[in-house]
Length: 359
Image (cartoon, rainbow, N blue to C red; front, side):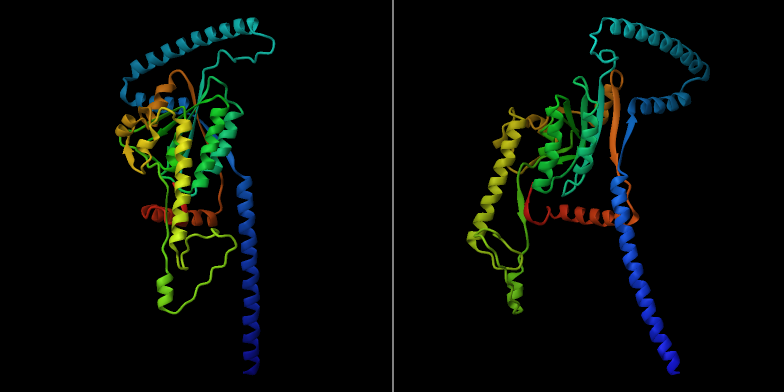
């Protein structure tokens, strides 16, 4: 019996050691997968002209008479051959008359529209993909090309959206025309990004504006005091911490915190004035939001139009490409992102509870 007891203890210790080793190995593998996933990020390009052409062809095969369709396809092939001959002839003529340092096709190629997407959360985490997409586009974009950013964001952290807006400024600095399309919402930090564009378009009921700054946090000092719990906060610097969650807040601390919010708000308004000088910022920088139609009347946007309509408008005369940076993720990261997204949505419903300023 004693032997069985000792054997059981030994077995329990062995299992404990094995489990501990497995936990360490799982952690190492998860870290390796995360690092590998970061290296595995890549750019995906979709030629939207071809995509919409295939969609149209699929519908046309269903709704048009087969004989008429055959005749149409025959005429289309003939027209394409003639167009190809004309392009070839024009290209040879242009190459003959072009300067020696000119690149082939520079004058004959259609302008290109590069479509990017930004789906913003509190931390504007899509900025990491946006920077890669913009770097890719700028490596190939010419002055006659343009960029369309389909933007959806209710705002978030000041520094995060400031960084996202600075990425869009790279496009403007390169001399490339930038249009931002808002189909649903571009508020606070989202509008800060949008106003960088040469032109803002929005759906009639898209939510625009909210040029303001907020910060809110609970304070449990009275609860702790009631239960005889002391909380010590030590700082060096008079305003290192103005408001706290557990300590006793003072009027002086509140005044300083409010002052910091006002400074941030002023910086926000100054940024919008620089980007949209035609806008009466003081009139609209009240923290209010406007639907698309009213936003147009206030000068917050330039035109009522959806991103789909804008793309369709360019398909006939432009080459349109969708550019996305895609990053493979391990299942642990996907699970974490799902939980993180749920938390983000909850926080947004409560107006982004945080101990720092937010747009």
